[in-house]
Image (tube, rainbow, N blue to C red; front, side):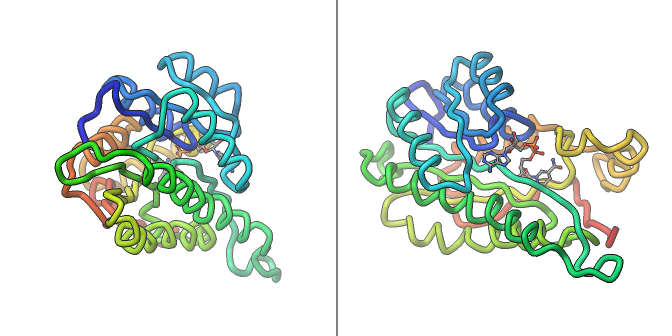
Length: 255
Ligand SMILES: NC(=O)c1ccc[n+]([C@@H]2O[C@H](COP(=O)([O-])OP(=O)(O)OC[C@H]3O[C@@H](n4cnc5c(N)ncnc54)[C@H](O)[C@@H]3O)[C@@H](O)[C@H]2O)c1
């Protein structure tokens, strides 16, 4: 899909980090972007910066997501790109100090990261299905979700997060197959460790040490590098049904 001003996109988690970088990258190519996020202050600021639209959306709610797509489509026409970046990453061990992992926390991570991504995909693809194709191949749209290397090598304390991200990676192929007759491609990016607010809360020495664990280049990933891959996935029509690790060859140690 050629990225230009005839295309519109929805980026969830677009108020911050990888989502904000992706929104900026798509907008720089002329794409009309709507940001879905619960953080209205940052979301409005990013939307104003890129000439886009902000919609206050909680990806755990059917009604909230449906209202967000209504806002996006009223402003920009039907989106042909969905990028799922909304996510949370709380930490807890399976057993800690004699107590089992809090199940409400496990469920909330699955609700946001996995079910929230799928909810946005299903609602977006329903809208995309009604659009005319944009290419001779019959392409109507592209969906990109965000897993994590934790989907494959989750660390101590990451059980809920790793399970949610393994779910995101695992649904990529079947969703791509489900949507193939509609001309909608489905891809997932599994980032390693990226410099975003999710990590900026860590002390400098911890972030430096994380960066040094990356074989090459030995540093944290930049959100722009994630955004560039998202843009390339949109543009390369043969990419479909798989998860790409974007991680400088890191394989996470247990802790
Ligand atoms: N930063 C990393 O190193 C890294 C690595 C691997 C995967 N990821 C994944 O990338 C995605 C983006 O992470 P980030 O680092 O940019 O984090 P971030 O915290 O900067 O951004 C996440 C955004 O999601 C929003 N969000 C959270 N719950 C939401 C909900 N229920 N509805 C709508 N929006 C919600 C937050 O408000 C925030 O703006 C996440 O899915 C994360 O798990 C990040």
